[in-house]
Image (cartoon, rainbow, N blue to C red; front, side, top):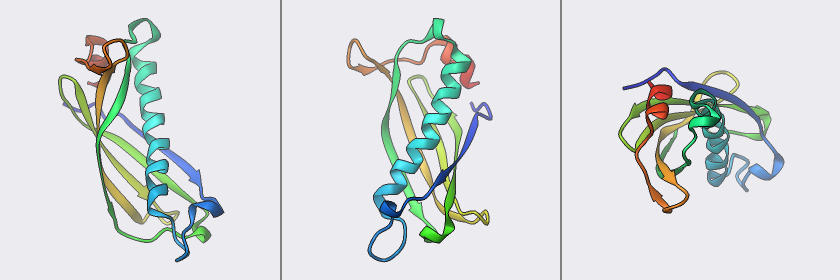
Length: 134
């Protein structure tokens, strides 16, 4: 089940993001993906509503494939995160890092698991969350 839930954010590149070869350091990609996931989770929380909030979400898995280099002179990148699949306690996101010309720099998937802050463990997605994700 998917909802068409998608978020896109533009992120300015910083000098500190670059490595000795003059392109984006591999660890920074994960920081950029966090920007996209945060936007998507914010939209999910908005759809669910504060009255139905039950906890948060944690990352269970991330995979990332690099396609083209990102350089400082690109100035910014676009992070696109979209809902790909919903389970009973988790959902899978597809993510992309796009260059200003629209070219694909990196892509992959993230699995997010619903988290119960009281039990400090996995929980089932609530009816409100499932409705917001559908």
